[in-house]
Structures are given as structure tokens and as C-alpha cells.
Image 1 (cartoon, one colour):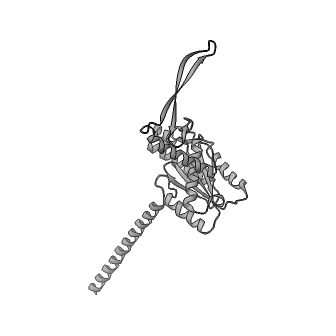
Image 2 (tube, rainbow, N blue to C red):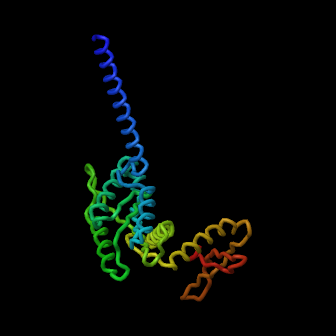
Image 3 (tube, one colour):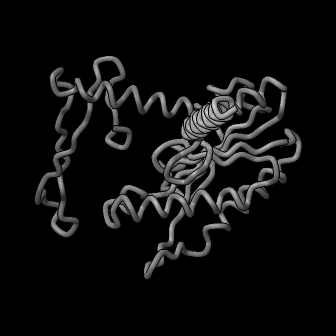
Length: 259
């Protein structure tokens, strides 16, 4: 009898140990799944989650809008306040974005200081619906972010693409929203352009010029043009301005306003 009781206790202990091991394995698996689909700084869904979710919504023929949101001049904030403090700012920004979006939307931390928002359903006929969402997002940053003894007033830029106008392929919508965001930043920030083909052409032209400019010196394509400075009282030349001009071998003269 004692042997049977001891054996029974051993089996119970073994089962308990096996259950504890299974629970531990499951907990670790859940943690790994969470880390795979969430940002560690903000706790929001991450880039992987957003891209997979967007593709799933588009496969179901949902009409959606993708908004890329970025904090203006964030690198200056990070340089002044440090990584730990700026991470708290990012967390607060994510919470404000999440709180003002319509039910069913997704707020994700995409990369660095950029957030990706998925808003649905969006009517391709009612522009007022999208305008109301954008207005709420901007209004959420009217009040400064208060952390410890600091008040930080920030502004944001938004780039927008829509499946109704810009395609039903997830990578294309993401690329177009990113191009619109870059355009917003080039315009000084604190605005929200919708993607257009003109934005893409402008971005491609800028990229091409940047790449070509790297070779301009070695090809001796940069020139100096001298412009006289004239005293209007005496009509005499009193100096010169030396002006850089890029004489591209294929595109001809390119103004400094462009390069």
C-alpha cells in the first residue's frame, strides 16, 4: 500500500511538473508573439503587424486610408532631451493618436518617430469624413506634452494615401503615404498632403539630382557665374557675386533653387 501511495504521489508530482513546464513554454511563446507584433517603447502594434493587417484588409476589398504621422524636428528633441525622455514623448504621441481615431482603426509605431494609422471604412465620395479624422489628429496636439517639469509643444506632419484613389496593394499604399509624408516635411511640416502622382515625380527627381550631384565635381560640371554689383548712384561696378551653377551634361543648366 505504501509503495502504491508513493508511486501515486510521484505521478501527481510529475504531472504537476509537466503542467508547470507547459505553462512556462506557453508564457514564453505568448511573450515572443507579443514582441513580434508590438513596439517595445510604446506598446503599440509594430510595422510587421501593420503591414500584415493592411494586406488582410485590402484582400477583403476594404476601402481604407493609410496615414503616416511623424513628429516634426524630433531629432532636435532627442538631441536636447536624450533617448529616455524622448521615448516617453513617443509613447504619449502614440496614445494621443490612438485615442482620437475612429473605432476599428489601427495605430502602429512604424519606425523611429513615425506612426502608421489605418482608418476604415473611408468613403471615396465623402471627403468630409477624412477631413474630420485629420482635424481631430491635429487638435490632439494643441495642448503641450507635460512630462515631469517640462512642457513640450510639438507639431506633426501627415502623409495620406487611399485605396480608393491610390491602389489596393499594401506596399504601394505604404510607399505613397511615405512619399506624401516626405513632401509634408519638405514644405516645413505641420501639414497633411494627400498623395498625388506629382509628389512621386518630385521625389524621384530629387533622388535623381542627389545621386547625380555626387558626380558633378568629378565631372567638372559645377561652374561659377559672376554677377556685378552696381552702385545705383554712380552706376559703377563695386563688386561681384560668385554664383554656383550646375551645367549637367544631359540636363543643361540647373538652378541652385533645384539642387
